[in-house]
Image (tube, rainbow, N blue to C red; front, side, top):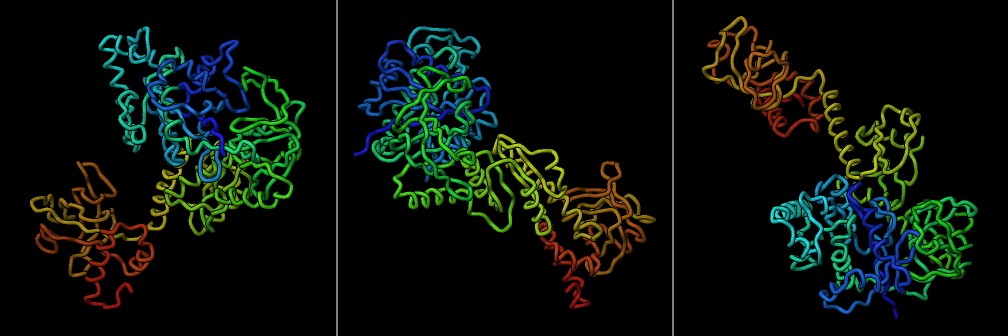
Length: 589
């Protein structure tokens, strides 16, 4: 018989939009002296029991019309994407539900969009906290519940609030999520609920907690079963050095019970780490865990779902995001195998050729890997940790076969300047926004492709087709100057030109566009072209179509470099080949 555990709630969103303030307000509102069901702190989570939620929500929970059986909500204390993507378990993300915090006055920012994409990747249900409504121009503090407060505002304030809300609705729709203000949602499984609120003044907080509780209760109940008496399963949230304790692990436990002296197995990049629990530590009540001076109390055992600090020997090599499982001594080999299969799902499905990937945690690595594979980008090596000399060597090895894969992408990690300077052939891109790193890589690839194209095609006569426009003869000869339209390819100063008969008749001496000298003109441009050694009315006529007279050796090289040519340029090459093979059947072969 499984017990129902509290759903794990993670808070994500753009920096400075109020994630930490929201968590602090939830904690602060929940703390009431001498209340039986008050908030408790665990490592990495704030545990808010259902009694406290009921007090915060008042009679709002009655609107859910469902018997509440979840014991409460567990809020992840470390807000942000890095914490969220590190919280993984086999088959998906450990977080059951998320709050996306958006400053209603600033709207969507890069990290907001990234958070939505990550939530989509992990199929994590979420609600939107449209924060900072107290800063909407003209907003006045009013009595009553949120909707009453809104209805008591001046009409212009209500209109402005609606305008800002529907800007969020539009952005969410663009990202594939139908959304609506929470009281206007018709179907919570099909629409994202937006709750206007203020983390600073607590306005909208009861409504936010109501919607969260309702969603968790109605749609997550089946996934919230936990074996309280079974062996613990969890995820390493952080690896920390604690004075007097040495290396410790902050772990989110989502299943089972963990006791002092239990054998635990933790995933590793090369092999699992096996150790025994020396001590289990919890913060003293109401302490702030992000305060590094926080003090802990020793406990004998902990039950899921919760957070706990573990002291154990030989855990220096543990990395954030790794799975952890307790087991009986007889089951060590079986659990080791399962743990490493879980790790292998993330980091060992690599290709022989591809970019190098580095990240701060196994969860970050997984998120990057998933997104890169969606874009069809191959990965040669993926690992946790800072960029090393070996990474540079691995990336440079790609250069000869494919320079566009001579790259290292790093999320939330450092790279020393002397490491960067080891190779001028490797592009190193780092940052703390996954989508920015991917955008930077795509931009670099486009720029590199253009540079490679220019280098490969340099010195060759390229396929080009131009038409001499009727009524635009500026000079008949010496040199002839005629208005031309570039039909296909690029016309360049110096390229030889031929007619459909295949005989070279002239070359482009110079070009002008709007009376300015230019060196190159692309498809669609109409330019004045000066051509030497021809006369209009004799060798060339108005309306003629001319081709670039590609030398045979250039033609053969261009066939090998077709990947740098557009389909229409390849078609012109075929036309030129057909013209030239009238006289020489094996021309260009």
